Image (cartoon, rainbow, N blue to C red; front, side, top):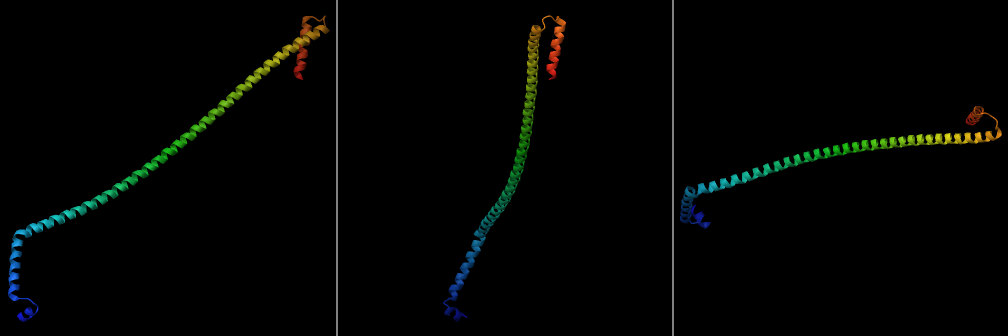
Length: 166
C-alpha cells in the first residue's frame, strides 16, 4: 500500500505528521474556540430566527391592520351614504314643505284678492246704485213734481228693484 501512496505522490511520514498536526489543531480549537464559535453561530441563528419571526409577525399585523382599515373604510362609506340619504330625505321633505307653504300662501293671496275684488265690486255696485237712485230721483222729480216724498221714495225703490232684477 505504501507503493500505491507513493505513486499518488503521497509521502506516508508526511501524511501522518500532517494528520497529527491536524488532530492537535482540532483538539486545541475545540477546547478553546469551538464553544465560542458554536455560541456565536447559535446566537446568529437565534437572531436570524427572531428576525424571521418578527418579519412574519409584522406581516400578520400589517394584514390585520389592512383588514381593519378596510372594515373601517367600508363602515365609513356606509355611514356617509346613510348621512347623504338622510340629508336628501330632509331636503326633499323641506322642499315639499316649502312648496306647500308657497301654494298655501298663493291660495291665501288669491282668496284675499277675490275678497278685495268682491268688496270693491260691492262698493262700486252700491255707489252705482246710489248714483242711479239720485238720477232716477232727479228724473222723476222733473217728471212728477207733485208726488209726495213717500210715494216718490216707493217709486225709486221699485225702479231700483227692477234694475237689480235685470
